[in-house]
Image (cartoon, rainbow, N blue to C red; front, side):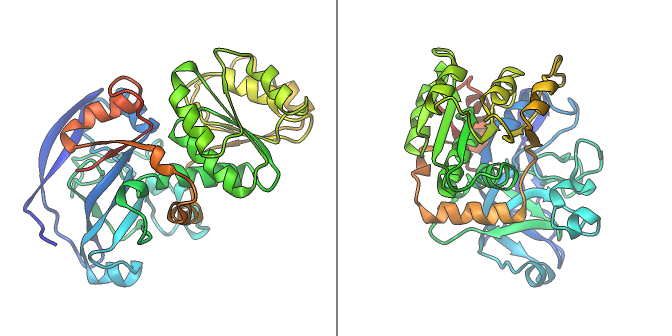
Amino acid sequence: MNVTEKVLAAVRVGPSKTDIREFPMPDISTDSALLKMEVAGICGTDVKLYKTPPSETTPVIMGHENIGYIAKAGSEFTKRKGFKEGDLVFVEHYVMCGTCEWCHSGQYRHCEHTDWRYNPDAIRFGYTSAQRPPHLWGGFAQYMYLPWNSVVHHVPKNVTSELAGLVTPMANGVEWSLFDGGVGYDSTVLIQGPGQQGLSQTVVCKQAGASLIIVTGTSKDSARMQVAKSLGADYVIDVQKEDPLARIKQITGGKGVDVVLDCTAEAGTTPILLGVDALKRKAGTMVVQGEMKEFPNFPIAKLTEKFITIKSARGHSFRACELALQQLASHRFPLEKVTTHTFGLKDVDLAIRSVGGHGVPDVIHASLMP
């Protein structure tokens, strides 16, 4: 593959502000590689961090859902990772240390080396400062630098780059619904929020054998609710048009559901309170993202009386990514309905705003194609 001398990248330079900048093509050592970007997915986290970045002055190349071709790979990288030049791959956003207890247990998503919330020197694709050499730490660019401790997966031959851009939300779906929520054969599930994450959960729950899937949303989500039904949801509820709890009780014959998956992100306390009430009489499980900073008057008594287990939705594991890729390769579900729009590098601002509901209408998952 031809490698140019300069790399163009969309850099977040402040709240809701992007500049297109040039960076030098990095030198690739024996244990590193260079990824030629094909698709960078845009999700709700990008919307939030674009509007309110952790640092208003630190320039960052965003993009953490990254698909591309290995353009150049050092001999040690190929030997260690098993990937060669020309391979189409998915790169997880975690950049692990490889030596801590979390890494040794395979849970590198919890590694301090990649924990940007608490470690100012952390490296994570889409989050790390573009001032840090070799600068190309995000997918909103023509190329991305891969150090030795990148986590890389082969994209199956029958999966397009654009469809592969769904791997991250699909992997979250596997992690949260199957591994954390325990969804399985004959499970009854409430999924709150029909965005790309909620739709991914719908597919995974259906694949796992759930006998009842209910998806809730608002009136502006009407198109997404129809996609949810095409992906396996048995019922969809517009919470602005009917009482969701009454409808859930009606659907379940008063029993409630086994598992609640909160994919509303920033909707506040209402979905959590609904989830607590919608769960079955005893021993239900709720998986939450927990974006709210405070939760006054949390109903802890009801939680303990109903013997509810609450788990936090926190990223994905290697196994979840592999299962997500297998799901995409199966083509069992019409996931093309989720990958609704594509944008070029110069349109990053519009793409992010559109995913957030303030640009191009009816965007579910946006693919940035540098």
